[in-house]
Image (tube, rainbow, N blue to C red; front, side, top):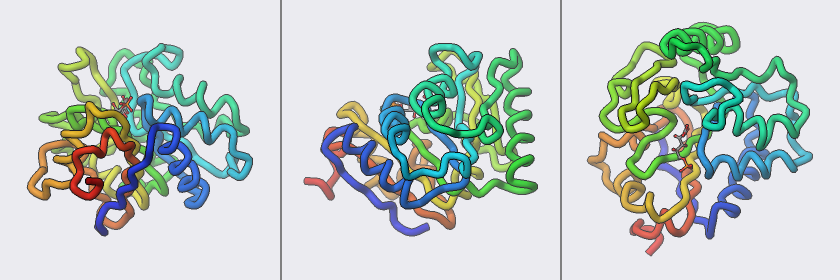
Length: 235
Ligand code: 6PG
């Protein structure tokens, strides 16, 4: 993997602008979307761009909460409202995680089949994976200490997340680390300490966000000043 590219921007709005420009430049054909408030700003901005061939993009989700698609917590619902309902993306290109299934493990297996139906056998290689990071270092639904971090076979798993008192459905490290481009979007001072560990402690190998290292791809971090305030490179 080449060294991560780190861009420190004034605020979430500037992250969204930089990320949208990168999105247009990359012109991805396959995208894994993230949940969370920081990615949402990007989606709202992308929805206003005229220079994107929406019908050429296959949309997936890196993770989902174990809720129906119309639930307030659904990453799919958030992305639909912020982006997909506002652009001419064909329904057949929208590959949501069917998290309304009462059995989260079955929903994960079904999503793995969905991935194979588009990418074929083997580990998918996404053109672009979008990611957020929680204050304790989780990314997608890979939380610190989770067994899901040791998964090296399944493409999608359904870990129980104690902190959330619920199951989540998430793609695994082999998928994220096989992407051509991974772009993190991180904002807020409550993430500064963790971000420093992730980006500047080479020994750090327990935080999920630090385990995202695309083997043969590009890793970008779009962060705001508050999240980046403890980084040596921005002092
Ligand atoms: C989710 C996300 C998750 C998110 C981070 C950061 O389903 O919640 O995929 O990994 O990206 O929690 O979220 P914020 O940007 O809202 O802090």
